[in-house]
Image 1: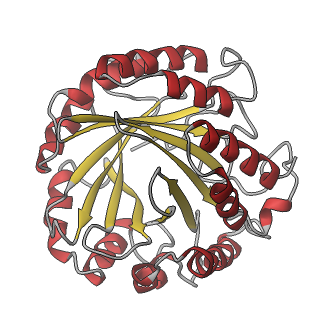
Image 2 (image 1 turned 30 degrees about the vertical axis):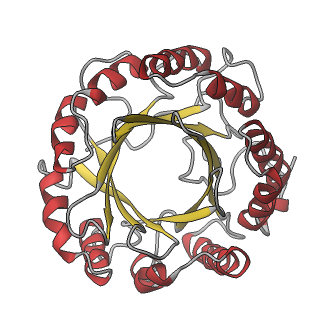
Length: 355
């Protein structure tokens, strides 16, 4: 099986089942996976992608609300050679293709490209790309950039410079306040950009929180007007079975900024890691279903999509569920689950250890 075979067949099943445009999704997947998608999937990754815990370069997710279901795919363009410079070349080619074929707007990406795609001894991943499919409109695209792209700047310095260039320099006060334990423990790990124009186009700063409790993050998220206090602790406990700090696999969160919101974050989201906190994906499925029911969301669609995603019995591994997030917007709950394509390992190890 090739990456293209897997990606298009999985996207088609998920989109068809969600009542979304599967034909459009197939066109997008072909662009996202071109040209490397024609490679056959080996037993071990040639390039260990940051997209999934087992190194798979394709992740699917679904966002559930009372109104609709959105399906998203995240990919990293696999380079011809297993090094970051080659990964940068693949990423630039993909950016150009998304702009040419689907109207993605990369002006802001161009403004910070030299920061996150440096020529001098780059390391780590280059760019991850997401496509979001919703019931209305064309697919939307976003990128995730690497703040630790090389040693010429720290991740903090690179992120701050990017915010300055994009006209959000004053937002650094909120970012520093949010990372109040210091950037070693509240580490900046991704810089996200919507590939769209307009006052609602988002900039996202992502953090990995070492030795942090859900209650602590819940209190910090009050920096945003949309946050509903108290939701995160129960959500995290019910999905992980842990009441306090998550030691084995740390929590991840983001602050979101828009031109409309100026220097104040318009929202904050916490992503709860799942694959190390249940013995199997069937147990995690039941936990997520129970939470959705209590939030007033139907779990039937989630379970149906999960069955389309899985290529094995859910009891025979724990690598499909990677993260889950929840938020309440204007009184309405939204829950998102993230699924590894699990191309290499159904029992992936913990990642990102140490503070």
